[in-house]
Image (cartoon, rainbow, N blue to C red; front, side, top):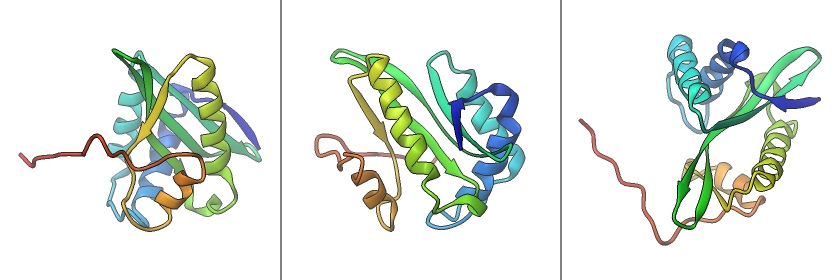
Length: 145
């Protein structure tokens, strides 16, 4: 297993992984591969993006990708995407990517890390193992247009 920085050259593969992973449980979002590739490219093109990919036997099987933003209390990192090819899930790949990402962003001087995840199922428990807790001071709000 090799963990290394994400590369824009691999955006097609990341989009493929993203579409497959998020089309299944717990999300069941029906992503088209071409839309997922655009989604990933937009993140990769951000000046404040940072991400890691995981390669096994010459194949990219997962990635973590996010962006940072400066606030009055310091720079924070938002994990936008953490996706593993469904054929490679439940092997600790997401854990390795998350652990390395946290180490790296801490070394970069980030003061915090945030993410949005499903409110039920295995994901809150997964992130809880790495110290993530439900925010009490803020709520996620949205509006359909």
